[in-house]
Image (tube, rainbow, N blue to C red; front, side, top):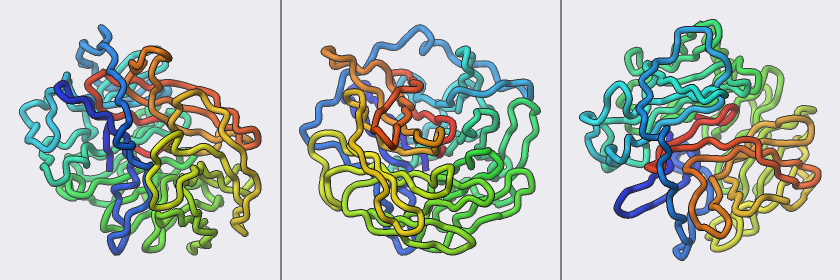
Length: 379
């Protein structure tokens, strides 16, 4: 399921919702999500649109010969899109479509990828769009093809397209949504689908290579031979290896699980001071980076985040190297101004040994909102 950064022109509401939070587990249990904003939280003013924001993206992604993409996004077409309403009249060749952005700023629309559901209803209005995922190296994208009612993976350089053989009806996507992600090397694609088995497939063969036992979900598929972190919500997580889950522990406070370290020994976590079930009312929702032993679940290291002001991390990603993990956060307001630099997201690297956080990139949206997909993170 893909939720969004929403900006309304009359009454502004900026909402960041963890995608996994709306993927219902078997039995109706919900996985843990980022704490909702406190009632007295001040919503920053929105930035002014740039000249680029006002120019429609008309060019279609070439069939081949495209280098790595920096990020992807869709937007709400200068507030023409209305949540929970029939938006079919809004959709055209330039509006309500996924666009990829290259390092030089070139933008292309992905014409065969479903983005915003124009047939959305008020009942499921938070299920905004079909996902698009980008491999960690930016050379592959995965998306839902509504004509074939299947997910597809496209290699941007060669133009090779692999169709994932599992049929998923468009009506099911609109009703329930989905979460997809690449393994670190881009050879596998994870499919989290509500009401269906959660699986990892080999991109090139289409074969299922991993099935997640009922009651568990995952954000990141692992490379071949590497254990995969799975969660059950409310601080419960474990590691899937050889078809079986070893539950590690129930974490008592708000936390986000990452992935297994490159050496296979630990799992990274972002943790916060509020206990499970409590509301985070002040400060950063997550203020520590923790590693736990992959086998025993015991804490191996724990250090406070040395982060930029208003970082607001809400997703922990894959490992960047032996001692840093990737994270996503919202864009911070300009100091002393109160205005957001941009709508969108910021990618960070967190050192698990020191807690030092460094900014890697910013992925911007037009001020009327939409959603961003970053390389290596779930779409």
